[in-house]
Image 1 (cartoon, rainbow, N blue to C red):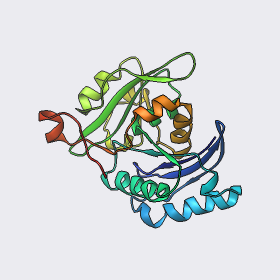
Image 2: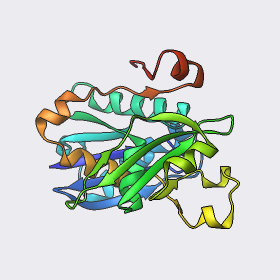
Image 3: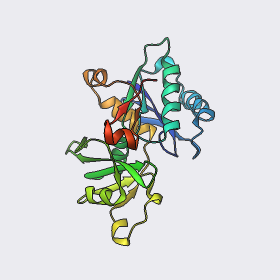
Length: 220
């Protein structure tokens, strides 16, 4: 199975190609949220350099958030365009799950900046097989609660510079970005039943809606 992975939810995007559980190639995009000008050429390049084209691709995995509002929309819109009039299956991958996998920690509290000194946060625990299972729903929390929630584990995020922490707190932190290769590997580990049960829609969480209505999902 060949899977194209696209990750655009953080300041460092990437595209990757995975075949039968092995990463063939991965290209990191410029640290900018203007992905529309970078990602299409990157996809073309990775396919050309590896000797493939979209007719070989079985699935396209993309980060669905939480993260950059602009990055999520751009990435998913590109996927929607790529799969038009084709049999390619899209798979949405949580950005926080992606971060947890990349942390390699046995217990990982993954978080990304949510504006106003708050963070999107979700806690994961790794099984002996290396699979990460969530311990709670994604939520928006203060910095104080973030550190409380990550007790006994590692706090991993692409946005650690947003945190003003003590030396003691910094010892449990790990700078981790979500990546296209991990999105593709996660998508490849899903059974057909698991894949079909997941809707390919972006996840947008905003403070006001999260408080009063819970997480809200919007279709493209």
